[in-house]
Length: 194
Image 1 (cartoon, one colour):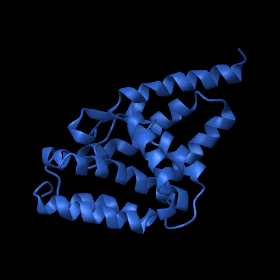
Image 2 (cartoon, one colour):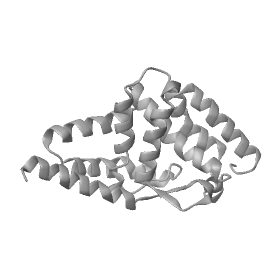
Image 3 (cartoon, helix red, strand yellow):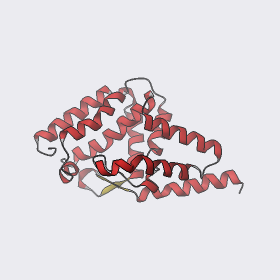
């Protein structure tokens, strides 16, 4: 096997570890906690299905790749719960170190390409990255809504916290923000969100 293929296969095996990173969000219907790979797959499919609701035209293949790679760094950095302010203080540094190590497994051209896509997602300045962020917010919101707000109740999450996160949803999709708004209001009225 030549070095390029060897590095590509090593990266492919390394990212399998993403399946072991459990998130706080539970699967629909009150199932077990989802893992990062399931989350990434789910939001990539949602991105394709809901692309007509992006605020701006997007390169959907680019969005889907962003969705698929955005949490790879959690193999090393671990999952940082969206409302854990203490863990968020070190999140960027942990994820930056993980990005350097994990993407360096790839051949240099693919390392540069995936690093740039990861950074683009993080910066959320392009239509594609803003729409990918909308998916990153809508996917767990949809699951939590399907579970009668169980994860919000478990973590004592406030309406202000959830709306703070969904400002990014609005930047990627006004229509999906309207849907998020309706779900949040319903869950607040039901007492699932403080």
